[in-house]
Every structure is written in structure tokens, then in C-alpha cells.
Length: 194
Image (cartoon, rainbow, N blue to C red; front, side, top):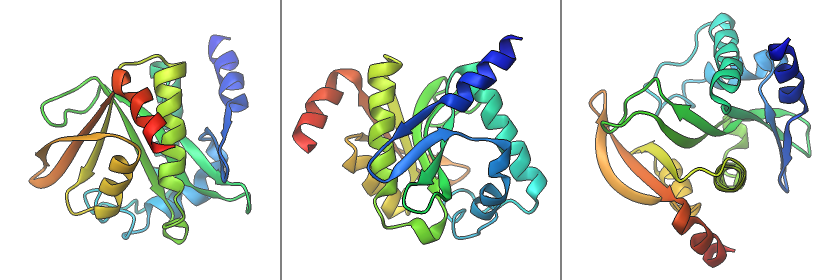
């Protein structure tokens, strides 16, 4: 019964920005999720391992839903208001199953969009809302961002939303940048940016 109530609460969750609706991922997002994660361009800076079957995308959605149940947070589906289309995902994740930069048990902000929606500012727009949710609703202290060094656009987004570059490290022999933002610096940075 507890899972049923959590499922209902998850399905009523929604955050709106100027151009986006952010909500929990649902099994009905399968077609667009597969379109996103089967695209080699999307996976250029994600290990070059695009999904090769809808079954994998189905498992990814189920994993995301389970993360919400188990960890209280996971990435959100991003819906473009003007078209009503699923365009990708954005938001927060508790990483207690990965080790990056010799760290585990950290929250990160991330985003992934279908390429035809790139260049519209949606990564920054949705991430700024995620930062607000993280520091003000979840009341957490440290948020991380990670981007491959060669992924210029993603590094720019992390800097634009106020994360500070900390160091470069390797993910499977690929150079990546580690960024952080502490709650004590969040309000100061936001007031300067807006």
C-alpha cells in the first residue's frame, strides 16, 4: 500500500519553468526515452554506448522510478510547454552506486535532451530549478556536476548555473571535470546571476 501512495504522489509531482514542465518519468515515456538514448550523438560524451533496444530504455525508466522510491530523488522528465513533447530529462540524482573522482554518496545535477531541442537554454533553465529544489526543498548542502572535458556545452551550463570547477579526473580513461556548489554559496551566486 505504501508503494501505491508513493506512486500517486510521484504522478502528481510537477515543477514548471518558463518553457518546461518537469515531472517524474513514467512508463508511457518509453518511445521518446528510446529516441533520446538510442541516438549516438546524445551519447558522444556519455561513453559512446547508446541504447540498442527499447527494453534497455524500459529498464532505465524502471530504474529511475525505483530511485525515486528508494532514494527520494531521481531525474525528471522534461516536457516542452509549447509542443507538449517529451524532450529529455533533467534534475537531480543521488549517486550511491557509483564512484567518481574517488567519491560516492553525492548528489549531482544532470540533463540529457533530444538533439533537436539543443541550443534553446533548456539545460540551464531546468537545472536552475533543480538547484532551487535541492537547496531549498530538500535542504541539502553540496551539489555536484560532472562533464567530460571535451563536452564544451555541458561545462558551460554547469558554470552558468553557478557550480565551481574543482578538478579534472578520469572516468574510464576519459578526462572529466568535477564541479561543486555549496548551500552557503548558492544564495549569493543566484542573486548575482539574476
